[in-house]
Image (cartoon, rainbow, N blue to C red; front, side, top):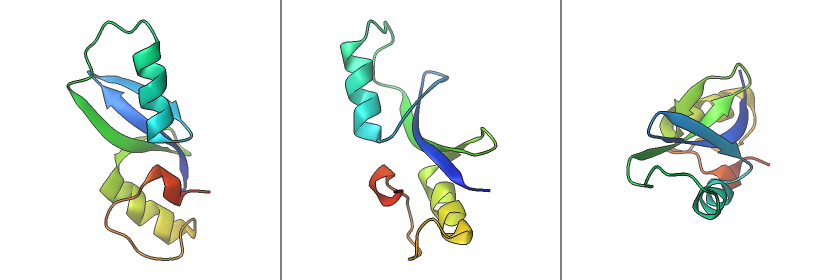
Length: 79
């Protein structure tokens, strides 16, 4: 399993993008009616599963996507 892309879950909806910042900017510039109050940063795996930053760090390290073990994965860590 590998990390495919950054994601943010907002009120049950999952939005994806290359970087978390890009997702937030797109969300703010769009006509989404849900407030940006109930959200969770995460990642999408190559099997389509939303995972937390902590789980994504484990997956990325185990799959060789990152060379150093980290507690929480940042979107900038994935090339």
